[in-house]
Image 1: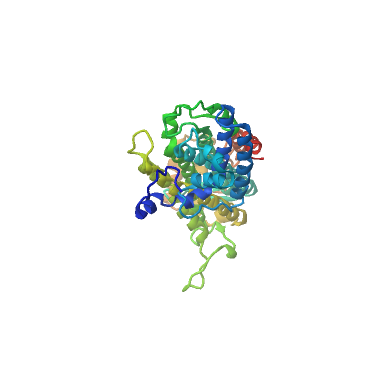
Image 2: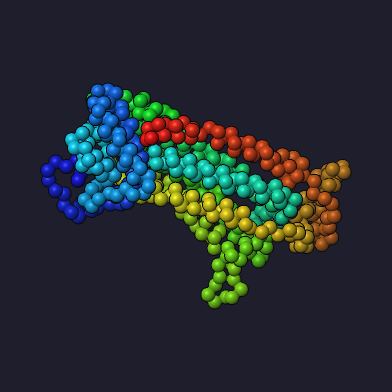
Length: 443
């Protein structure tokens, strides 16, 4: 069955190629396609394009299909092109001709636009929750180990004293900026494209404001041409936000690989979280961090892949956009897996204390000595030269204490302030409005 069937058959090879992975990808969209149809037909009844009794029986059956989809039991049958065709077929089989009325004022173009936005909206909310869990784990570890010093590096050379408080806290604060990116993606996503039809609107008296409210969107994509142009752009913006998050997680994973190596030895992974070698019996490899790093590097390429698919297209719909689903939909589960396993690894990682007692790190305290002399009245440049010459002569020693007090330093991590930033951003997501609308529509 094809919604565009006009009484002739398409070559099997052409059909197989043009359908591609749509049947597989559309299973992710099934509950959202049903939800969008519920909102659309409710609006159609309000403008006189459906009778009340027709709406009632359609909604009843759509709620049944919605539950099937929510339970993961929705199937796109052989010979059925996509989720939109399958839903309409199920309605027509059960209800007869009234099932054929649900497509009035719609195109598959704005159906898939809507489905992808509803799907991405739910996935963003899921990601946000997992990001917050990792953030909380990092902040807890930051406070727990705030007094445990480690060397900081520039150019991978020992530079200045750092601490596990700073290290864990740095990645927590990085997540606050990633959350800002996710908020921007949410705001772009949570705008209603339904009613754009094929990208040029409809002569039916559609009430797009009504479907916006029914589906819990914050606003409309008003211009119907732009609504269609949002296909690909929305996915690209979301994937940019995911790329920002992936960069943070991937960098943390790189540190994890480095800090657990014998040459650094700042962190230990419990042996149950490592893998071995088939030839070297001593090996306990941090494969978990290596794979997180690889997945995160891969995910950072998704936005560019989408840009390459859409970057040379004029306005209007083109079948090229179908391929976006294949790279876009899987990225959510990949990112969720990385967030979950990163939080698990950080929760269980073992911090090595007393690292800075090793003599090879003593030059990390050279700036502390320069600052001590400057505090005592010696001009900074003279103090710098004095300490530098002592290092050259092999006479440098530091027996003082680390005393950092300014905001964000070793002695003043500003954990509460960083949490306040995260709380403020998360408070701007309109998840509650969406939940109320979806529950009202589907129950």
